[in-house]
Length: 347
Image 1 (cartoon, rainbow, N blue to C red):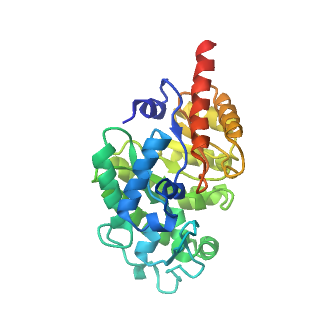
Image 2: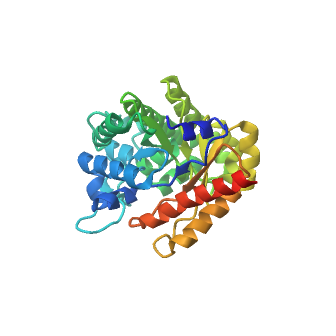
Image 3: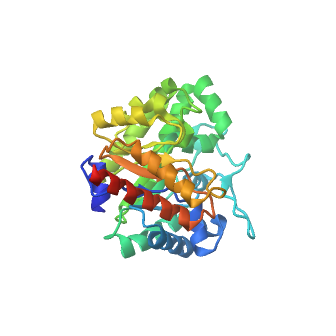
């Protein structure tokens, strides 16, 4: 593993703060293609991740474009792709859900990661990238979290209603989702690849802390224990939004690094993560990266770094980068890390 990131994950002093911008659909921009094109072509996805590695110089790579759709599509949900030069991100449509609740969870088919949907495509890309870069940088296969996958299977609105009206059925669907995620993650791990779990549908912006603790925490812990049991020590868990209200439960998931998104309270993350010796990635706001200049990005990143309190488990990241984000903005973030290192060494 990259030593800089390894030290941060162990909350040990490293030479400089690791750099992990959130690059998903923006990968396609590096190869002059659209997200819909790259998401359906293993060779294009491989080329996009390799181009990201060369141009961005981040401290880990993620195999995935539309990271919340793959398992759901393999089970039967319909995904909307876009033709021509449309740079929209593939998404599960309003009528794409496959679970109606009338036939029970047993009616859902467990997908085979080697055969179903785009799971094999993503595994092929991961295999290619591990072969080329596996000794150079950590490579993580993107998998959904249990709540996000269950929400796609039933439809987000219907699933939120299910958690209140039929909590036992909701738990059963979460258990099914967990098994799908475990099998897909295992397939990545068998290639020598890591995994990163995305579960932003479980954000407190949408779900109460009590419901997170009762419904989402147990299956999340199970998934992370399973991956650790397969020998994986680094299991990041990404929950977007203001997760300050669920931070205690977030730390109980077993994930060895978590996300402090743009709206979360960095002071509370510093206090609680330092006590737990847990690494966290702090995102700067990138929602307006197509409008602002690189100087603004530099100052935004530097301000975030100065909030870190020199905590050795601090990782600098960004919210999801819009397709077409100028490369100069990513260079500016790296420059901010170097400037922060210089200032820290002179104190």
